[in-house]
Length: 101
Image (cartoon, rainbow, N blue to C red; front, top):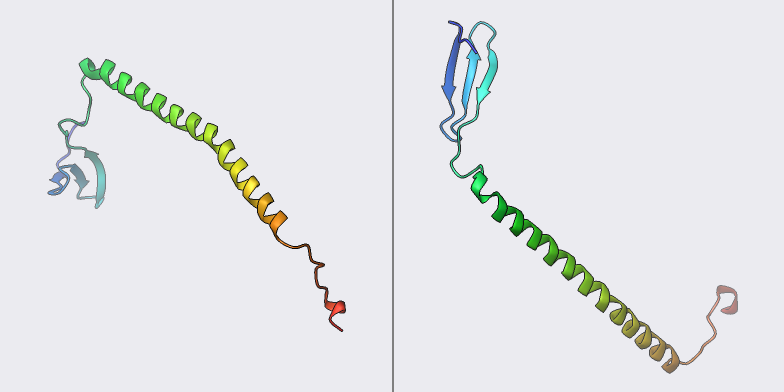
């Protein structure tokens, strides 16, 4: 892009982005982000990155499978506890408002 005489480039001191400001318009007309080393993976690392991601997905899947297997056991235990507690409690007739008169 050709730079006009009315345009100035101002670098950001914190992030390194360069802003292109048109003085006639009084606004930003463009920007260029700073190159960050290490932000882009190298092509030679692609196989390793894909293998790591596949391993991470597999670990998450195995964790969800294990939690689903133990979920049934936990629900069965809770049901048995509730059933035992219901058997131990005496059966009483619920009070109604008009029974209190």
